[in-house]
Length: 356
Image (tube, rainbow, N blue to C red; front, side, top):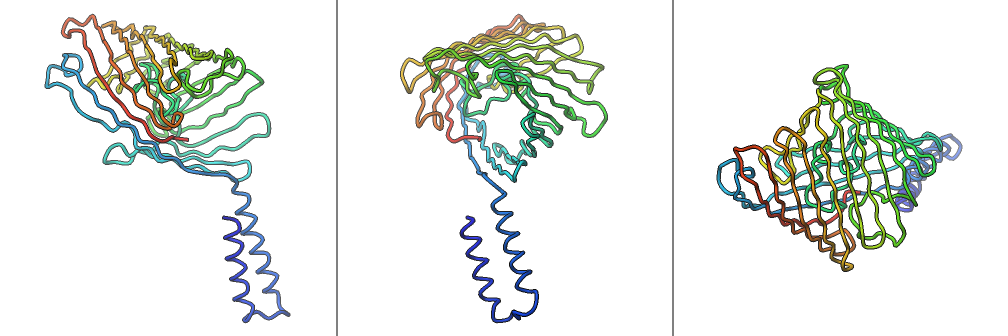
């Protein structure tokens, strides 16, 4: 692209030669403008774009999934995401839209700058760092849905943050609006990580993992004074791989004033609620039994008033690395709520492309 721009400018300069007086300063001005433009083009550095498409089919005839209505048996666009990013020296930007509905939903829209070797700062609209399952890119998810905690904390908001690392230790801090615009109340989140042998990176499961033992352990503190007083939680999560085996887990301790809803999990009409004074958790194990096939099992518990538990069995079929894959899943959900029977949900999903 730099050659194209420079050539175009050179042609423009030649075309102007017939009208420029060599004795005046117009040639010097033209040289300065050309140098300025080519310098700016060079300083823009790398950039790119990506497209991700995810679609799923869900079937269930049980009460919790249908709320006593017609059977669920249909298709849904999970994601139609278009992302772009670029750099300008020590600065960079990222923008992404999700077009899965008739309305384009702005997701990422932030700038960042490298503060020496100390940390990276960012400002704009993005996902705050909380639980690892909440900020994995969709193409790198092991299941169609995130965990219950991952779905609850999967949200975009405007704010400012910083990320850094000291060898095997990483940290992040975010201050977000909290969904109430520019009102003075905010959401705070702090996260620290320990990465063994480089950590597992932003991927769930064992696909592409090395034979060495690698792992990531994270601690999260989340505080919101947007809704009612100081509502907060402490959380811990871990993930590890060795050869074809992967394990992961997470747990959070909600205080009395904090409650959240995992609205998209298993595509239930009302989602699953995490009450205050609860300790939701999940555990996941997977095994890559062939280069293109991985089996996975996930067990979760909301620890809410209805004490929902969910077990999901999945088979993943990979194509072209992780840029194309199929998921086939069956989930069994039980609840202490006597108004609903236990529920079984069948899902098939396809993912093509990437977000980054």
